[in-house]
Image (cartoon, rainbow, N blue to C red):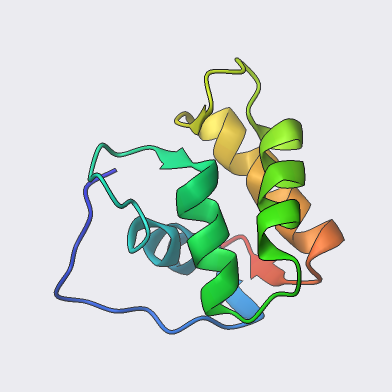
Length: 95
């Protein structure tokens, strides 16, 4: 995942999968192409999600399949999308 600082995606409760991925890339603090729990916490905080730190922790428990502390492959992104839809009430449309 390459991060693009020039394009800011505004958070929304409804977006496409590509918009969701672009939104997450904004919070890849160390630009390593992976999303850490801290990155995810900041992303949730930007949407004014209550208890963002706890929800980021829960999302990582559910989505980080290889338990390396990062969301770094397509299966984990899919798990994160499912978490966002079910637990954060986001509408993420697959094209």
